[in-house]
Length: 275
Image (cartoon, rainbow, N blue to C red; front, side):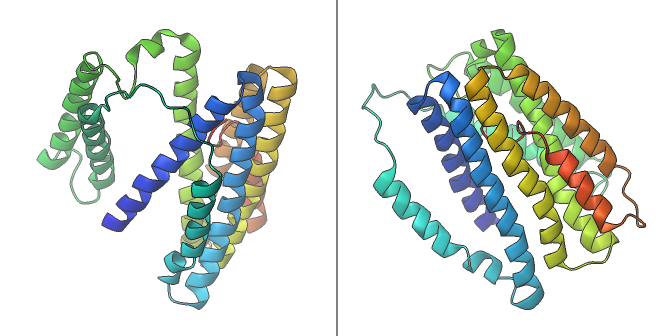
């Protein structure tokens, strides 16, 4: 678990820096194309990663799932060190360490509460109520801290902008939908349908390929037309319908039906990082 935490720490930094780089290097109209490219790369990695992981789990030691990707990390490290653009030196801002720490408490206690509720502890147990109470109190404290520090983690004044607020709410809902499907489908394919981890990875490729194609198309359309609202609405409607189809899965559902549901769910070019 602690090693996954280190992995997530590094991955989170890389993902946020990649978005910031696109915003720093390109004009708002050009960002759609390059964020679409980022989404396509993410999709390609999602396509090969689970499939290769399934093959390794089925035929070799499971620990090789982690070892086999180390060479890719080394190559990425070299490319970033050599080719990443250098930003001009600016006046240093104080890092909001306190706000970051309190925000971490908010998220961790909330996740633990939902993870342990009805599994390790009852919903009305002191442990679960305590976790949710800690998360709520920490959230209030976090909001207070953000109003006092010079460089907050989340500048609260941005939420006065309706576009910013709505975009973040939609991104939050999209993320819930995307990761719920990504996590649930392997359980269904292996636990319900009784297929192998390799098959699970291959089936998820259907969603990933659709995500790559739709992400690239949506990014280029935004750059060419300068319009994004209609694309976002259409993508959200298609995604909602795809998630609804996945709620109808049962033990009798064929793998072909699962694949079609995933394709429909993924034909939203706005649900990838950066879009």
